Length: 81
View 1 (cartoon, rainbow, N blue to C red):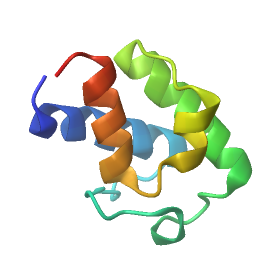
View 2: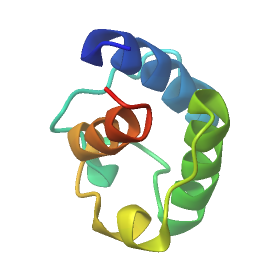
View 3: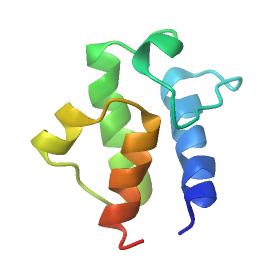
């Protein structure tokens, strides 16, 4: 999977999770950029991302990702890309 393909999928996850079709995430997107992305929503987001990509984040990975770009990096690494 290419980085661009991963971003297309993750954009859909964000839109579904936050019920906002206008969301477009980038490498630099952080929680404060998206209305409603708080600690509780973060847990739901991670579960939705895991389901979408067929992966599981470790606690360490989940707690150290600082932005969406780092999340995509972890996803691609787990997918073997």
